[in-house]
Amino acid sequence: MKKLLLLSFVSFIFVGCSTEQASKQIETFNGESIFVEFMPCQAGPDYSVENMQEMISEWRSLLTADDLKGAWGYAPASESNAFGNTGWWELNWSSQDAANAAWSQWASNTEAVAWTDKYESVLSCDAEGRNALDAVFPVEADHFGVLPESGYFYSEFYHCFYNEGSSKADAVAFLPKYTAGVYENTDGFDGTSFHYGNYYAQLNEDGSHTEEGIDFLWASFTNSEASMVKANEVFETNMRSTLFPQFSEFATCREDVIDIYHGWTFYNSEQKDFIPDFSSY
Image (cartoon, rainbow, N blue to C red; front, side):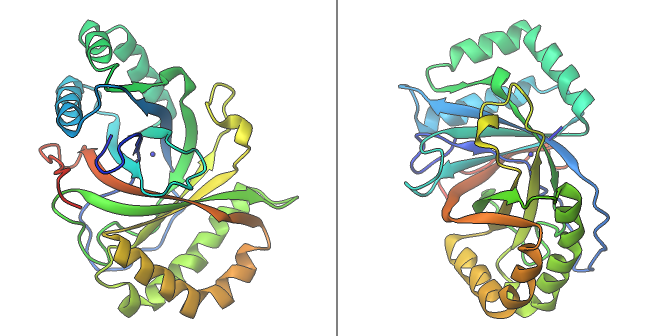
C-alpha cells in the first residue's frame, strides 16, 4: 500500500505514519516498508471545521477493510509549500494488492458513493490520481515523548532525488546510520515526539504528481512547531557535519522548498476508537 484539517484548511493531506505505543527500548531497523497512497485533494465552497468533522466521522463508519492500517491528515502551514493549496489524503495499507482490492470494493459500495457525492462540495479528491509509495519509519512515534491526545502533530517534508547511479537501496542503507545518530542525541530529542520517515515513490503512471520526478520524500514529525525547531537544532549542531556528507553521496534534497504541515491522526487500526480534536494544536 503506501502513507482536512484546521487552520488554513484550504487543503490538507492524509499521511500514514505509526502512532503505535512503543517502549523506550531501541529496536534495530530491519528495512521493512509499508505501502502508502497519497490522493490530491481540494477544499470546496462548503468547507468548514464542522463539516470536516462530520465528513470524517461518517467516513470512519464506512470502513470495513482490515487491511487499512491508518490515515493521517496535514494542513499546509506555509504559503511556500511546493504544491500550494493542494492537500493530500494518505492511506496506509497492509499491501498494494490489499489496497487495490479495497478500492474495488469501495467503488461498488453504494453508501461509499453516496458519501463521496454528499461531501464533494466540502472536499474533492482525485482517487484515480493516487500516488503510490513505499514508506519506512525507523523511529517509533512516541519514542521521544507521546504525541498530544488531540492527535495533532507537526511535520516537514523534503523533496529528494537520487544522484546518478544511486537508488532506493542506497537510501535505505543510510537509514541505520541516521537513526543511530538520532538515538545518540536522546537528550536533545526527548520531549519532542520526534520521529521520521522516508517515502519512496513508485512513480506510477496514473499518479497525479509523477511528472515532478521526486524520487523520495524525507519527512520529520514532532508534537509542535517549537519541538521541530528544537529537533532541527540538534541535527544542525550534532549530526549534520557527520551525516550530511554521507547522505550527499547518493542523494540531494531541495532545501529551498520545505513543505510544512499541521496534522492530525484520523484513523489508526490499533486504536479504532480514537477521535481527533481539531480545536487543539
